Image (tube, rainbow over all chains, first blue to last red; front, top):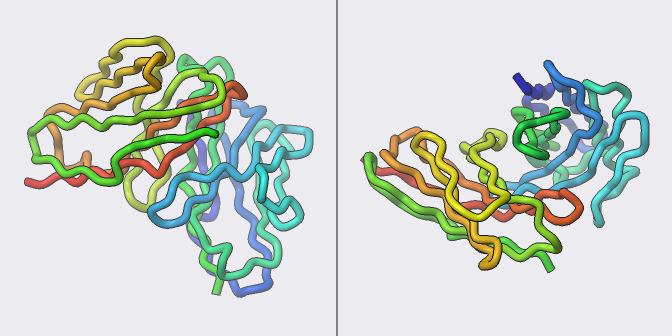
Length: 118
Length: 109
């Protein structure tokens, strides 16, 4: 149980275009999902906390107009990178916490999406 | 500020035991997680400690001392597949995970 999927697993796009990444909780409902970004050999960086039915909470330094997050249902959150640039190339990972998890607040991670902007 | 300190890289031999240490400073504390991350993949959950002491789970054990702001992950009977990065992530008073860069563990035959 507690499986989180992401789509696509990798994407290459041209500079200036937008890319949408989906994060789904397959066997549980997630009122809260998290979006992370990770550059090579660096730590996970929390970008935003996505709450179902309300606006996402962005971390300091993360442009909310550039990284659009929508959490329209209890099983789906999307991250849209708008007007992508090469510096946005990174590994984007989502996670979710199942309700009533035995390990309090344990986050289950999706497999990640590798974005390359050319 | 909030800070995580782990060794950048460690090397161990297949079949041996290795201990990965982590010291942390957070605003409040709601437990500490250890995650394993293979290169190019997302992290996977290993353990969670909220009380002082040792939690054993198969080949992996995790220890916590809240007063010292210290935790370690102990891996026994190392296998080649254990080559990965190990992330120590304490949870602060807002229930937010604080991530360090992790420890890259290299297992040699």
